Length: 325
View 1 (tube, rainbow, N blue to C red):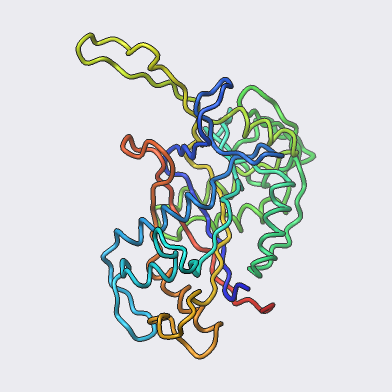
View 2: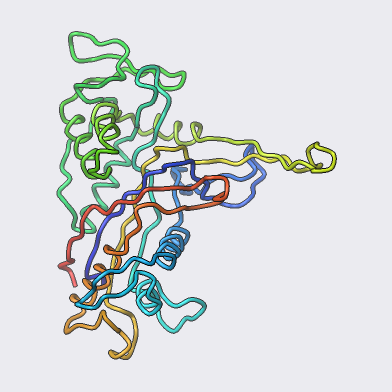
């Protein structure tokens, strides 16, 4: 089983098109979604491939087990992510599909708000427990906002008010527990650099816990739909049939994925390279150290990368050594 576990946050810096292929619906090229909830997701295979590509393209030097190596060291990448085109052994890292955590929606006040819901938060809580991560015991109450919220249109003396998201109005309660939850998210999701000070403060004040049904409607109908064409260079007109629509996760969407590590999955001990140690737990820890030290802050995921789509910022929450073997 997995010896080291962590959780990775994914922040969309530009719109992301993790496509599911062409369909006959309203949108020609929709994004990937869970079958039973229709929540947006990013398949783990695509996420793992983009991470591998980032490692292969890095020339940074790191120190693992008293060995100085490059992040793009071929042997370490093969042991961590698995060899290319060869089923001799699997990689030592496992990622889950990236799940939605917080979704941006246009707001009458504050430009936009971040929304989530009890179902998403309960799932997040369960998966944090699975990877034995930091304690997450906040009260989850629907239709609430932090006490210091900037997006409440009308505040009443009873700590209630209204927020307007898109064209919909919601009755909300200003809630201390929701404020504590928003602070936890802000401090753990965003980097601590001054560049993200504004965004940390905004999330602390502009998080809304909606009911499950309303959240589902927003993530189904408030994604970005872009119409694209291909122009004939000679005539300057649209090529016949070259008109299509694409769906994108909007910028500032926040997702997460579980990241888990084992010792290298090779038969011969001598082939474990710099990850070789006297116990599987120590070997998995060395694989994690390689991943953590080479971890890219920004990668591109999905389609249309040459037109600036798919930039995401990554952040690890902080690992926990597994205790269940």
